[in-house]
Image: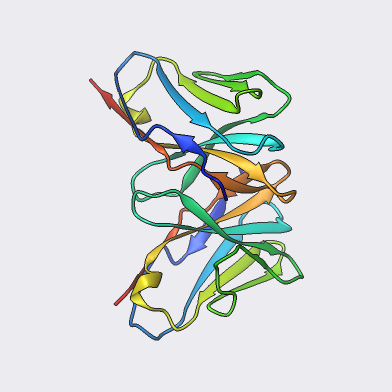
Length: 113
Length: 111
């Protein structure tokens, strides 16, 4: 199946710093990528839909100025958590759509101290 | 969005069949998915079913869809210890194939 990578796989940062997470589709082009957030023992919550060459569409309650999404190419979308705070600590997972299927990255665990 | 409901926990013996149930919310969902998540890892797509189908079989996996009741099930035949994981059902929402997930069913397979 199609492969999606994320980098970094985990990151620890100080409160107030910004963190960038990359999501790449390795063997296919994805016009649409999605960003999800998963709290411990919880389900995945859709944060935003990222479309190549256009602005991301954010779900209700997700601050677009805090979670900056850039989908610069058909194989790369980035999520930047700006001025991170401890409550932003979570598991962030991206997915890339290929036809009717979504393939997920391995996730990035963010811990904000 | 509204909740996709799943039972939280299921325990079966190795070699038995496992059935994980899910109730979804959006009758207009085009596709319904089953994903597997192992500890600390991302999601692995197991299978999906188009909404106009009643059943789909893929090796040890059988998906049943009751569109009238908005009920989806995943049957794993001859369950193995390596099948122990969290299983999420998900419905496609909007027209862009974003997914609305259930909370996941934790499957424990005992020897």
